[in-house]
Image (cartoon, rainbow, N blue to C red):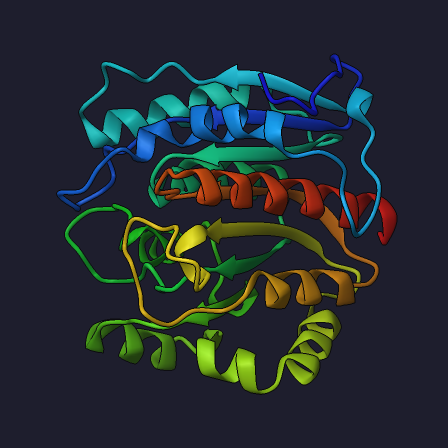
Length: 275
């Protein structure tokens, strides 16, 4: 149980773990440990700095049980159906991964409940490689091809590694993205620009923790943004309606687990206080 979740069915925030690594192509696994590692670390993290949280307004619904599922298409359908059973669009959701492909069924469900929404995507990679099937490096490509996501509704932040094919697809589909250097070099203008784009919009946020320079992701990149940049962008947002957010691909260690908890809590506090 997440330490800060003391709520019930009436709570605004709902937390769900999706401990899957079936969508990963990496030989390094343990993505499935993410939800438990985050919950365990939550007992070491106390109050927030950027806003307030109400423990009674956060309910932890536990994990979706996917331990024995190995077929990836069956997995996506299973996650989608389990989420559909409990989803209430009047609530805000926090999804704990798992590899980043868990966002594939999540965004299908979001699209069916919200005809118009924007995706604010924090990741070192665009996850748009045209692989033969949806996985953790291709599922955004498939969400667009399957018309669950419009290219013009995506903002990617912190890109530090992308394939030649992905770079061409981003250009051809006119998807807005900021690489890690641009974020470091011009965070004030970028945060204002993102705020203007997202003004008065429905918003879903997806976070692959490898976007940060801390080395907490499974796919380690030598370059990344700071947590400060992430929080700066969120604090700049005005008049947005947050649908929910996910945090994925945690490579568990004491410092990284604590970081994941702090990102989750500060995100909740910002949207409680500033929005």
